[in-house]
Image (cartoon, rainbow, N blue to C red; front, side, top):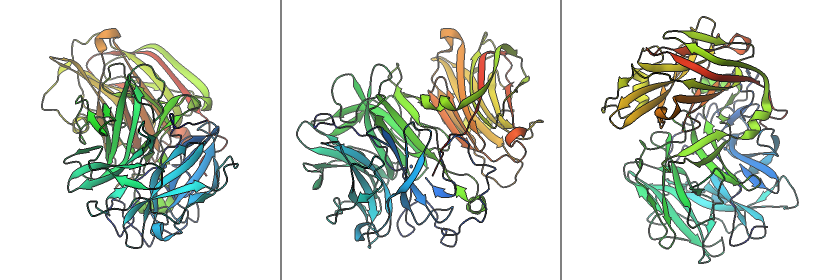
Length: 570
């Protein structure tokens, strides 16, 4: 039973970033394509074990009475943005999903032009409620509420929108075209509920705070929970506590000693997310970042690749906090129409605070391991400078790969240049084929036999007066021989202590058109969407490579062929 003193947020918000063409936003509107069904769905690039629908466009979970509810923005009529409803699928294990009816669709004056993203909260009496952004007849973004029609239905198929909506209106001090994505609410010791809504004022991102005694009548606070200049619109804000010790998650309403707080924002301008760690001053409703990382788009990120509009939820069943994010297509809208679908969800990740207190750790939920099939291993294999070692014996177009590298010497390590401030640009300059001192070394995923196609996942190490600096990269520049595709290189710094044991780990989930990687036990994560033409299905290969001057050793590599869930998508 959820009480007023311990109110669990058991839902991840519908993943955000869906915008109506009449108001400010990112997504282009292809009116001629948004209701064009695919005659035949092309499965060449469909993922095997990542969540996605059988057709059309998606982009967005709740744990309630033993069931995970996954809400997501969905176009039931086409493979591009438009005709958006709240799709709804359910699961008991985060892996196998069953489709149910859409939870929300435009039907009232307060959401006639769109049912956009939001969150959910569990009210006293174990009653879930959805908060979401609607677009009214004046194309203003307003915040609305919805309740399950029948709490005895374990799947909560039907939701009711009261006529007293909207419950939050943009007043004269709020930009009505930049006012969206309410967070989960939390209950304070003063008897007030609180939540924040993403917004902006000129170029300043805002987390506008609202308070309520009854969850119906909401009053805007005089000051935002937090803001930062030069960041632009804050989409999909997320605000939650993490324990300073251990890996267990913390209920959203928890407050007190032994906790840090996370504020995450998705930046509409750059299409990247960033987060800070800090302190929540509940008496004055202010969030103060620690200052250990930048409070702007150059700061810490959940994922340094194709990953956006994420939200977390507290899984009360297993006492963990889970992160789920959206990975959009990187081919064209015409390609999406041609293949009949677009967008996948990254594998859900457990999230906890690193022991250094400066960043979060992310790791695929343990349930994904139930899909592991045939396994191959490589042990204590030295990879010399310029050498490539193939990992064979499984279908590597759908694989879970864990490898630990051992670095016996660092004699040839290169010095770090203080002018290198952007890891993505550095990865672009120093791709997988550019020889270095210690690195590049890592994996060549979704590679053809002669490596004309490959997606490289690798590390480089540098020395500085303050110690060693790690760089992790995704280089998909040779991911396909198809012309004209968007193939961005991604990169992030890796917080590692190589002196400790000389070990550096990498895990990559490879799934036909996505490579999702976790470096240094989940300290740095990168996701890429790729579309090989040759390295498909049984013709995809997996290699370990080393283009550094120093030899590296594969201390241990395990790779599993991944099976398809019995129920996947909708």
